Amino acid sequence: MLIGVCRVIISIPESFSLKEKRKVKRSIVDKVRSKFNVSIAEVDSQEIWNELVLGISIVSTESKYIYEVMSEIIKLIEEQKDTELIDYEIDIL
Image 1 (tube, one colour):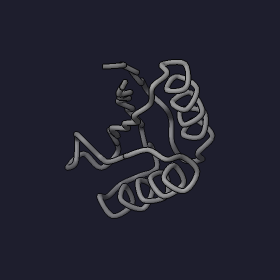
Image 2 (cartoon, one colour; image 1 turned 45 degrees about the vertical axis):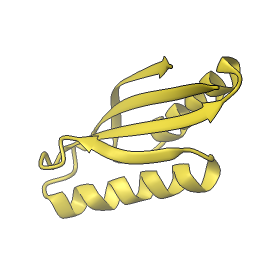
Image 3 (cartoon, rainbow, N blue to C red; image 1 turned 180 degrees about the vertical axis):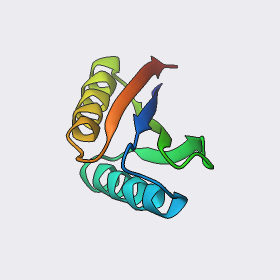
């Protein structure tokens, strides 16, 4: 059994309040959850209104599958309007 973990840092330049940040976060989280069978949550910078840090995890028996799914998720996040992907890191445990 392998566990894939991804930490994603996203900038939200048009966000000027936590309410606006929550709206963007909810949109991304809902899209990822509906398309992929993964766990996703905000894991850091909860009080910073223009930065979003998400943690994503998936379990599989193949590392190739984990990388494929995580790559598709990153692509989906990159395509979001009003956001900018700053950095991400994928680890397999």
